[in-house]
Amino acid sequence: MSEHPMSEHPHATLVREAYDAFAKGDFAALDQVFAEDIRWHLPGRNQFSGTYAGPPAVYDMFGRLMAATEGSFRIEVRTVLADDEHVLALVDVSAHRGERSFAITDVHVCRMRGGRIAEFWDTTTDQYAADAVLG
Image (cartoon, rainbow, N blue to C red):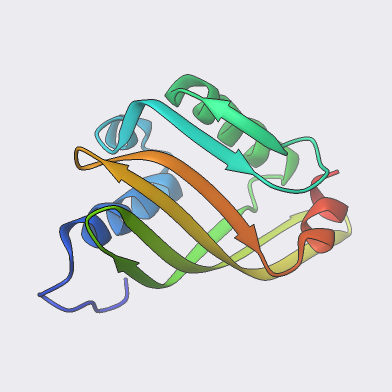
């Protein structure tokens, strides 16, 4: 866990904790962070691209993502920036599937509402690499 300042915005702390919960597969903890009507947007042209509405759809996608990447999907948080409306997380994402793999930097954007993540967008520095692995 990287050190972060005591004066960090509460939304930054919340999102850091969400990444920890994701890494552990702790969906109960994510239920406390995700809005009931969360919208989750994934870019690209692969089997996971598109918009997911509601926590159950997001969790189902997470499960399929872990299965497709043989449990190798990882997110390493570099830094988190937040204000009252948005959180930006600079993250290193890696995964493999068979002989193919990627290690890329993404910026995750969260729109916050009522202390929860209402909307999530993934922006990536190498969509082609992700699409090639995720299929």
